[in-house]
Amino acid sequence: MKRQDLGSLGEKLACKALKKVGYRIIEKNYRCRHGEMDIVAIKNNFLVFIEVRTKTGKSFGSPEESITGRKKEKLISTALDYLNAHQNLPENWRIDFVAIEIDPQSEKPSRIEIIENAVS
Image (cartoon, rainbow, N blue to C red; front, side, top):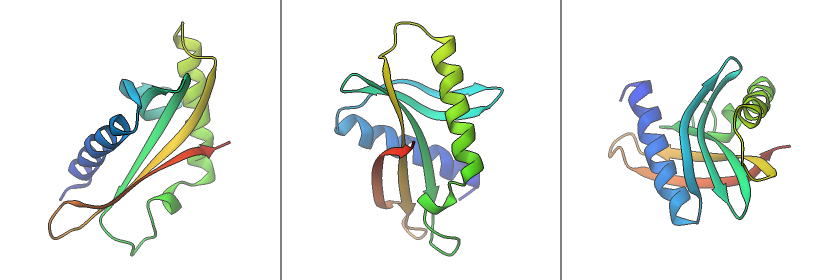
């Protein structure tokens, strides 16, 4: 599976999992000069920025381990850009991660985990 296809599959699975637990998706793939936010959603009167990481094995670490300090800084900058560019949003916001592991044989998820407040 190509990297881009894996990323698209991960985002699709993440949206499904997020909706199942009460997130309302309001935007996907928000781009600005700081970077990209995979998913923007609302849950319990919080604006939630969501980074999705999808991997097919643990040979290079878990999906969570692939988020570097630099990436966290870019996520915060992107979130702040989104907040400045949009109005009538919930006052409270946070950044969550969705970690997805895909079985390379079946191309089905073996793990989907939502990690709230992943960046502070």
